[in-house]
Length: 141
Image (cartoon, rainbow, N blue to C red; front, side, top):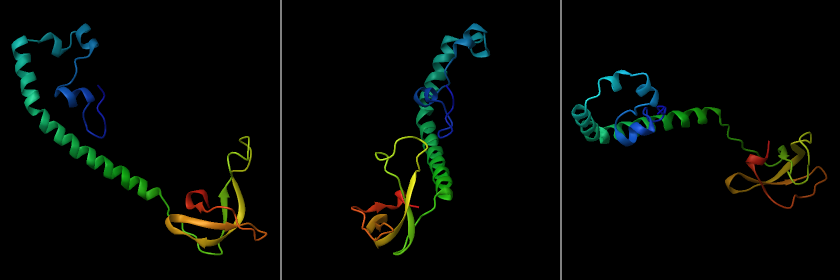
């Protein structure tokens, strides 16, 4: 019953082509329930069903515009992070090692020793020991 910002219509309207008659409209004798005529209602429903495909196409266009707006808003906030060999980074602390919300979320510093594909990096600690696996950029800062 509430119009969605992505389509501009309520889910009921998307399915049936008309707005739903709310129970409160029946109780309080709204304009729609007071001036209800069976024959006129059938004509309006048929007309709405004929127009439903156009409404769905319009909603599809609106949803594509909405997606583009959301993508643009996301892209404005996202920063791509790239590191070079020799950079000092912090890595996200392992959840299994640390218990409690007051523990540090980040460990380090570690040194980047090798840049791998797709945002992965090999690290070594301050004593020169290589970490046993590579780490993705989302776990580094």
